[in-house]
Length: 336
Ligand code: GRG
Image (tube, rainbow, N blue to C red):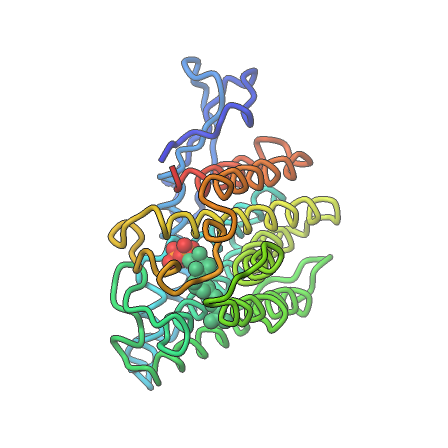
C-alpha cells in the first residue's frame, strides 16, 4: 500500500507535509509541518487508518452492551462479529467526509458506529447457510459456526436495531435533524437499497445476468451504504446542498468501484489474504463484473469510477478532501 496521495491531488506550491498526529489522543488531527524536502502534501495512510480504526473500536465498545450483560450469548455473538477485525471502511469514510466539510469527529462518530453495526449485521446474515453459507469471515469462523444459526440471526437483528438507537443519540445540525439522519440510514439499509441488492443477488445466482442488472445489484448491495456513509458524515458537519451533492457523487462512484474491486479480488486473491473464502463467486455462479464483462474491462471500469469519484470532490480544497482522496486511492490500490 502506498502512503501518498497521487500528485494529481497535491499542490506542489504548498511545500507542506500533512502528517497524522496521534499524540493528542482520540482527537486525531491532520497537522501541517514545513518539510522542504517534500514538494507536496501527503497522508501517511497506514497511520491514519490504524488510528481511525482504534477510535471507532473504542466508540463501538461504548455503544454495545457488555459481553457479560444478559443474554450473554447474544451479546457475545454481537461483539464476536463486530470486533472480528473489519477494515472499518464505512465509518472511516463517514469521518473523512465530516472532515472534508469541516465538521467535528465527535459529531460524526455515532453515525460512523451505526454504519459499522449495519454493515456487520449484513455480513452475519449474508454468511448464513440460507444465504451465502460461508464458514469464514474477517479471518475467523463465521458467527453461526461459533454460536449456531439461531443466535447468529438474532445477533444480526440486534446489530441492525442498535444502529438506530445509536443514531438517535447523534447531534442534530441546523440543516439535518435526527429524523433526517434516521431516514438516511433506514432507506440505505432497507428493502429498496441494501436488501434489494441482496435479494436481486440471490435471485441472479446461476443465471445469465445482463450488465444493467449487475449494476443494480452492486449499486444497492454495496454502494448504497458506502454512499450513505459519506453523506451522513457530511450531514453531521451541516454541509450545504452543493457539498452534500458532491459527497453523494463521490460515494456513489466509489461504492460501485469498491464492489467491482471486491469481485476482482475474489478471483485473483487467496482466502488467506482475503480473510474469507476466495473463489466463492465463481463456484456459486454469482453475478460479478469479471464474470459478465471480464477481468480486464472490470479493472478499467473500477479505475474509471474511481477517477470520477475523485473528480466529484473538486468543490472541496485538496486540503479539506485529502483523506477522502487518499481513501479512494487506497480502495483502488487494494487490487494491484
Ligand atoms: C444480508 C441484507 C443482507 C445484505 C448482505 C454485505 C452483503 C449484503 C453481502 C456480503 C457479501 C459481499 C461481497 C458484499 C459486498 C460488500 C462487501 C464487499 C462487503 C465486505 O466489506 P469489507 O471489505 O469488509 O469492507 P470488512 O470485513 O473489512 O468490513
